[in-house]
Length: 405
Image (tube, rainbow, N blue to C red; front, side, top):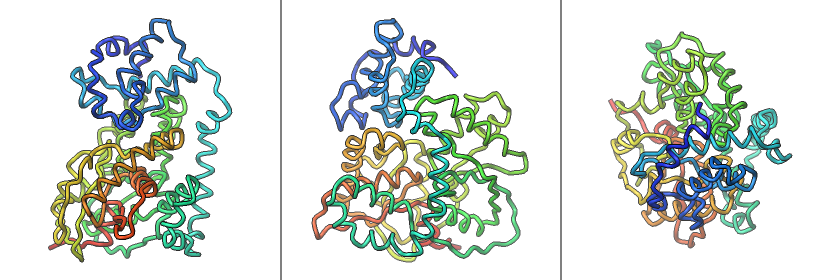
């Protein structure tokens, strides 16, 4: 991994043209010059020269970033902005004493404890139909303020406990499945859906009780904790598989980066063999049991290829919505630290889907599911406008579609 000083030439290479303003979701929501790459580069340039200190105040500006990396794709110099900001935040952890709040947010023990409690609590939550009750009164609840909106958001994450019947023949392919935190502890509906679809293709999914992929620690620059997570996950990896898949675009992106932070040969094997679950389904023909107007939200870290699968779904009309491939604004810890900005970005996304009058929005990232739900919780809908259903691509394919012969 490079240190901040190693990116000195890239930071100097920035021409300060300001093109990053046109694609940065945080800048559009705040009009804060420090939200865009060139603004942060001016600050980091001062740090490298010794004119500024990389303290908590400066780190707050670095946190004004969802990590979507849209600026890299739009930058004439193709500067990898995300990696530079990670290196800068890693430098902060080396040179600053953490506050109590930072220690809490960076405690993997507390994070894991919350997940374990959720695993035991949420089945009871669904059993007593609390999720359905909150959903029924959703429009009234979201008028009660920020806390109520978060309740709606968390309720959407709880899901309905969907468990399809899985029938398969003899397995022809053995696939290692990186299930991720959301599937394992919060809501395994997507995992069940992936299993059902691939079972019909004679694919056996093998799980290894992996830890979290470490996305929040990487993005926050807490590299020491991130490397510990890498070691734990690699220790559970063996050679007895045909390929490795995940259904989460964020996990996919982070797992690809393991080889940049570990010298273990297994890190290269994982990074080179990881695939998105839809990649094993892209040659299948799906037909919806009912006609819907469907759209997608493309996560920042997934490719456009999965949209080709969506467009081929029979009996459905595909609608391309404005900015469908722009950041949803959630970005994990970003939504906790910058609630107002995150909500504003998500709200605009939600409005675009309302304007396009779609029935269902499909995506391939659990965090994006929450980001979209957040947007509709922020939005004030008129009585004659109904919120579209927001679903994982895999659950839609499993519960609403059949595989065509």
